[in-house]
Length: 98
Length: 107
Length: 220
Image (cartoon, rainbow over all chains, first blue to last red; front, side, top):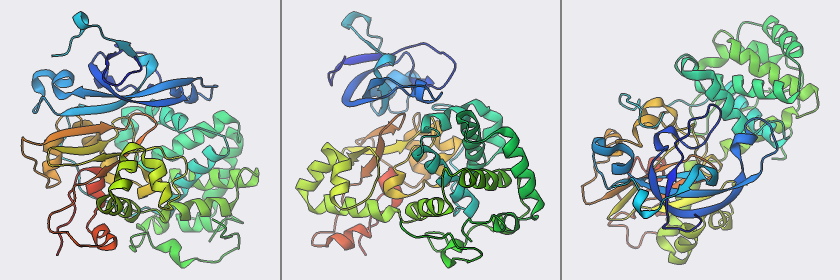
């Protein structure tokens, strides 16, 4: 899933604890805007634990995808940084984006 | 809190008080010396919950998180903190009075 | 950084003025709070234990005080006048900013450009991430529940509260600083600024225009 332009979905899981994937984007589908490189996993760093490097991506979501009918301007976008272990590849037939 | 309903953005701004600048600086210093991470700062802020967000100022929450992280890192003990806070309170009724007697800190 | 303020009882005049030249809030003379007591105690314990020194804490405060939106304004003005620099800035902002001589530490910066068809705005919904090593500390409103909650859902309404009304022909791109990057908006260069030099242009670049909640000033 490392390529810009690829469609990805943010995992729907809701574990407790310190997570940098914002809740409002969980389960939402977007497009990789760019790869940012590898960073220590914040879910380990937050607890003072040794942190393995994880690839970080900027993912672009449309307002229509994130907010549905509530989106005032559906084509406006939200870019967020999401770690690789929170991203799932989206194949054509399972994409749930408009 | 992204996407939650909320009212108009309050326009006010304030210049930071000295004690707030010191909290900010101590968080940076503690990170520079490997005693905490920005992720640890955020984790404790989040664990403080909605109540803290409503009742404490920004740097009040930061100093609470800073302290929690430093306790976890073993930088000092809870007993040492308790004794020091009691000693500080004895010095005076204002921040200026309590901070002035700090022997070695800047004026 | 090398200033040594380890002397006793010496009041530094600049301790009483903020970077903007205003007095600090009255906290120094208000009743001592629990959290202020904690700040003093934590600082003194770290000094007594040899983790840090009063001079290091003071140097950190001074380093942050020295950072201001003027730094970002200089970067924007350079981008407006030097196409090659702008290309480097948009490709990888941190080295471009460092080449201008700014000490931004480990800051990982992404610059995003406003055009006739795109308006960018920055928010941190999870905490208060901000390019502090370039622009200084964030304004209070940036850290509020209201700004953080609403900007990702109804950015145009939030921008309207700041006096920025955008036509439907402009796409709004919200950037949520969720992890390790920080963001700088390069606002569009205002009309009527042809022939102005970098210093004059920088004076038009406001802090809010680099967050996306404002537009540059118009030339006088």
